Length: 530
Image (cartoon, rainbow, N blue to C red):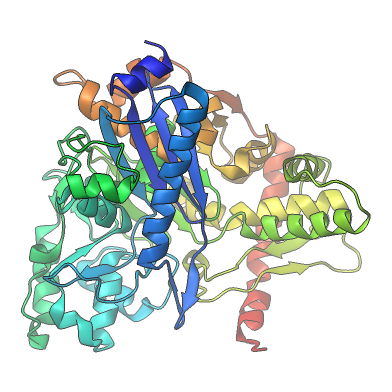
């Protein structure tokens, strides 16, 4: 079938991912190739000191994204989307979405970006003897308990953004195991939440007499390939208010953006890894065994089929690069020069390749928000130089690119140097890699490892969740997710690999030492109040 026939026959598969700055929808054919896309741009809001997206923004954005997809299908193929073979929903992981028995959201959605949960994360990490990050759902709910927030006693259901959307579209309170592992740790053997940790948590909060147990308010955990319900009539209208999309479409388990990134880069096997670098960044290295001990910068989550993953999550990545690029755009407009943002990014990224391997001594921090890996609950973007440093455009851009992945390097040094974790292949994806060869080379220098980027890297998590939906409907009995991706999606394509040079590795190492030594400057900047 060609693309039009695939859509008309209801055999296309839809993947939707709600990212930090963009909601994206991708339609794929029976060969897992993208055939149409839609998107919606949005931004989080700081309300009462907490980062959030309103429910209106969530649903307006989702509907606008789907409408944009419909428009492209209508323009390209002259038809409407009426039926689909499967749908998958993905979104930014973690955070806090508590609901009462009536299904009402009790407080505004608290996103992964919030770092107000330090006290809770510290207590839980000690209680569980396991690293519990600030952004995990269990940290959010316990912090709310510590704060004696009124809504706590009314909680009937707690989920993530992907779980919320999926529930509203299908009526099913379920979650993919990868996303679930960012709520509370899971057991890779049972493929479910850790029973011992849920028991410890319930004992911890028992004096509060809240009237609920943790296991009773969490979504059911499902692994890749499981049936996660079907699109209801109400859900169909909620996604597509035009009324063209019919009910009954099967759904795969909803997943977090980490799991979809692993699927989109064919990095679900042990000894593979991927780095997603956009508004935030994270690396995912699929482990062969448990780490020897907990590390605060290393989160242990899972692949969509339940293998343990060492995750380094950084709250900040490209936002500061984007801010400086907007400044260059403003300069260009001042002279009346036509602006092509794509060209500006490409020119500036490539200019960074001309810079010194150690950025000429320049140091930058991209901390638009807090950065837990380095111990910052708040952040201040900074650029520093001394009078003797080599201050030019090439070094300035190179230091911005280095800063975007500096925290990522600090976290991964623990895995590779202290835990001696072995990895055969790391794949990069996200906006940081959009300019060919540049971000790839910088990351290779940071991690001291070859980095591959595939042509499909720009498709991102929406394509990844579409692949997980495809796996649900197309995989053969006993076919693992890794085998499905190897044989039916990537067919041996490992992308283009770039290995780091000795000069680049030494240069990045020199930069990161300056970066770590200057952290007190960042600390002083955070303490400074305007």
